[in-house]
Image (cartoon, rainbow, N blue to C red; front, side, top):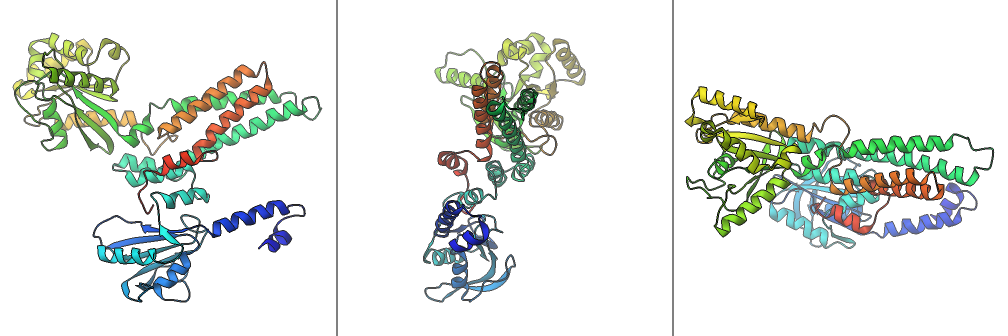
Length: 496
């Protein structure tokens, strides 16, 4: 290996580089071969057991009792046996993926066996008895794919999000990220910073020579300003990517006995919360996850907002107000019959749920007028006109008791969610995780510091560009630590 590289691949004088390559190659060759069940747990028609590492081929030959592996990437029917006893465990498909043309970039094998627990357990135990094989840790297959250059960190995160996706919106966003769209955007910005930094450092080192163009500093300044503008717009997306990934936090709030728990039960289509004509039944926050129109929603029912001397209810009201402050969208529910008779009740309820400061900040809310089964059509029309006159719309009329108006309400709610989450299929990809936001914000701060230093000290200005580039590198994995990798891959399931 050493002689081949020395004579064929590397020029004279590169022996040190070649020795380093050989040492790394030898370390890779000694790397553990991992295995795990990659399909879901429990009884199923087919279970997929995957291996990755240098001993994958020998494991395949031992488990199938053959002398040669099948054709690469070709499903082949084989008897799968226990090497220690030659007992047949199952008849299934085997696939051989020689590296680097595999998911992890290493030699890899997949055993497609029947999904009964006894079959899966027998194959896993047989693999575990083979030398140089060990059970994989959670996320280790994807981590090796990243380490071998098959995925960058954003694509690996997209894969994790795709595995956990529960709605159409989450699936679409995760698929775009896994395909590398977010990573390509960050890599483009990294390349721009690299080129800009190189020009600035060339100017610092050789500005006295005639080989440096006079307008190089203007080019650097223009490039940094353009990048700063792009980063600012990227960060000002209203947390659409994060909301779509983690769920939109929707809180049902309003006066006591307005029908908040009834609305929750209507949306969940089951008795999630206790409903009673007695005011103040709900004391704590009742939370549930829903899929509304393809958008993930974390829906919270809260205690009725009112003055009380009951210690437990006071705590419930306090928690309700905190949830309203933290919410992405507030469903303000009001007793429509009372509001029709007392328009002041409508205004007071809105102000009680959303403080004047929050109303001034235009916090996203949707007014729900409940108990419409108690009002005639003319009273309902007058109530809507009152809402328009008071400027507290948009408003939805419904009856949680009969279900009338629920469809129109769901359409209005879905429209709000679509506005808050955006369309994951179009436009520029959005940052989906808090770490993206943090690194991008630090990168933006460094670019702004560059603008301050460029007039006084070009060396310090260049250092700010290096800091900005380092923050972008952390996004894709060009710069990182083992702690960062552990955080990213900790939520992956075993076998992925």
